[in-house]
Length: 304
Image (tube, rainbow, N blue to C red; front, side, top):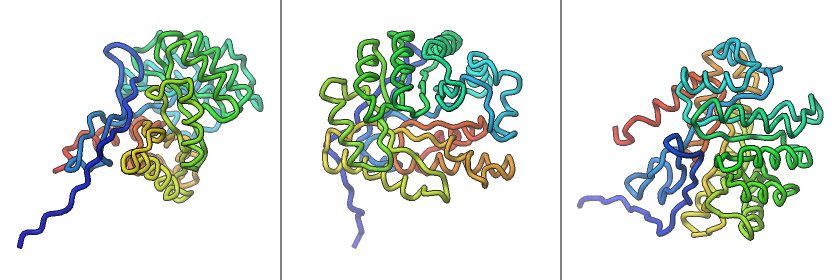
């Protein structure tokens, strides 16, 4: 008697979100199946993978992460061009590190100016990221939304304490947002509910936050997987947003990644691959070699 494996199909889909404009725009989400489950449904859009740049010279990046970028580390626009033209980045992640109130405490106006310079230098989608300080990010990201009006950038992190200001500015100026709720699927849903009262659901990406291999990665995996399960299996429309994962920042702060270049690159790539298998739709990496490895893996035929 021939055995036929049971298949599970889903009548709903993860929402599609468009990053950027024109020919360089990237679409994420849209799947009605879990990662690698092409036999059960469709995965119309590959996850987007962004390379990270800073608005200031990195102060604590390990040597083999800064080496590929040479003399452009103090120039975010030139750094962006190098990521796109030399390393093939199709999405960029600009971390506004200089605005940290505990550091340089750069102004919202200077941060917005940097974002516009990066946008003018390259024709790929841009994610603009604050420091996680609710009060400072509120001013920085609203100013950036205004300065980049109509460019469909992605702003984050949008938190429980500042979502109204940032989301209103994003909606007024045609931007998308990343809603962040740390390591809790229920908190993710709560934030989505209040946002969707006035903000378009198809311009929300969720960030459950991430941990690196050996530092809680299995918990990150379970949260990302849970959000995807709630969306597809339970048909919860407040959990059908694409999922964001910042692999780079978590990976390169670990001692294992700092031990050697080869180990660091593989460490970052393994973290990124794990997030993809959990269901992430948008990844951030730091090392261009990690990007190359992930793009190579994503290009392979799942059936091969």
